[in-house]
Image (cartoon, rainbow, N blue to C red; front, side, top):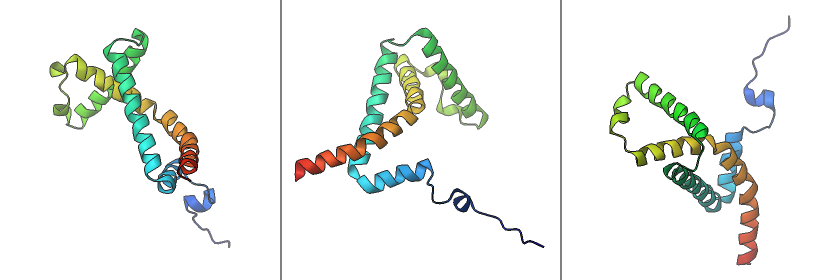
Length: 132
């Protein structure tokens, strides 16, 4: 009889790293440069989305889709008993714009991560050249 053996996911995948492991590796390798770039990109994206919603630069169709996503988050909060965190009747328009901006920023995360992977090594080489 042949013996059966269970394999771990790392044995099956070989030495391939997951996306989160690659992202952590980027932060370990480039340190403050990677952190500063990613945080700046995140805050810039959040700010642009906030201003876009606050000054109504998005189409009604786009805003409607994001409101639907925001309502799903609200429903989730209600289901887990955290609805007191988000009282829709007391939210002013600026807080609503910020909430929509946060949702849009979360949806853009794969793009921000890809940009970070592309730009950070080049930025680190450029900074190294300047300091030399």
